[in-house]
Image 1 (cartoon, each protein chain N blue to C red):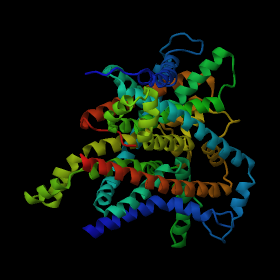
Image 2 (tube, one colour; image 1 turned 135 degrees about the vertical axis):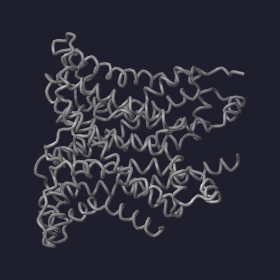
Image 3 (cartoon, rainbow over the protein chains, first blue to last red; image 1 turned 90 degrees about the vertical axis):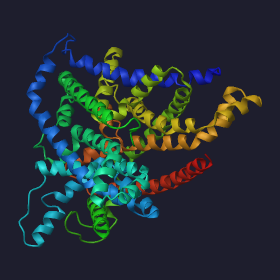
Image 4 (tube, chains in turn yellow, red; image 1 turned 180 degrees about the horizontal axis):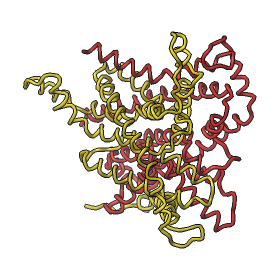
Length: 274
Length: 271
């Protein structure tokens, strides 16, 4: 039996829908509009065509983000596993320890890492103190990737940890009973069961990595232009808004496609863990 | 093996915290250096509190986060109510996916898309300097909304509909039954939704970078401008204060979250 809905229940979502159309849908349509028009408002494909001159920036960004995502997974997966095996009371503390960096502004974390790696920073002072030559780290590609790993590692650990917590311990016991050694249990039971967490973590690290501009500005010392830097620069002056819109549009489509592909591979309940 | 994994875990956490700890320690450094500690002092804290631009940005940030958080919480809570009752599956799916766009999209795309909208609207209305506090309020409300809906919607799903029917049978109007019976039950979700949107607003730099103007600076924008040039050491003091505030908030939220977990577990036990 269907109960009649009250006016309140029927109208409740309307303000949100209006808001979403005005401030989520409309802005994206305007980006598309800018991407296909010139400064006079006429239709043009030249913005899209000019993207080919940015292809190596796209390539560098994708490579950097992939490497950073890979290392986050490599470091984060064992970390999440160890966390999920700890005592419940310890787990609570570990959660706070993991969440705290996520809530501290990315600017502060990146900046603190930069001061540590800087030429006059603590790491180089320590190197000199033990009689080694100082190393110029800021301004290298390695520093940019390290920054991405450092900034986004918690975003990899959290969803994996959540999916490990959901995992039924009896699966592990069953695997052991059926004669799996710990490696077999890991690769044939734990890994498949935590795949949704892994995919969610990959998305949560890859997307901010590929679109960052602060990390590359600070730790790259201006030597590395990533997609984020390029977009940011285009939006400083109105004359280049159109090219900027075209780059944003392409990046958005690339990311939405990869997120959609990821969601395909994860199970139906693959929810976004915030 | 077990000890090895423990050691590994604490090493990773130590590395994660090392830069932040160094920052905190050197905020109390008397001399203006990042590698040599010359003595304990509150000097940079004093300087920070005499910096009127920093204080104004803090005030802007708080005002913005509270107002954007409140607006997002009100719109989002009603949206969750509407979505919970919505029977048209396609409309529901469409609303859900549109709502999630700002969460899936990189911040920079959300930022530039809103900036283009505001600039275009400003062009039509003849407002050259449309970017500022009002565009910031709109943008921050918009990216806060999905977090509110995400935290309120599950509460509506858990709510027992027979309670609503009982309230109506006992003579409540639909509005009364919502405000008197349902709202108290979903309140934890509403509060955590507000806290989420509040902190997202406080923390946001990328979107603000595009939709604000130099005459409306928030704390992250101020930090960005400071770190663009030679840094004043009062920055470290500011960062330390922010980190301590977040730690306190996080412990408080974690405690509140623990209470929520317990009630959830109790409910599951009853089932």
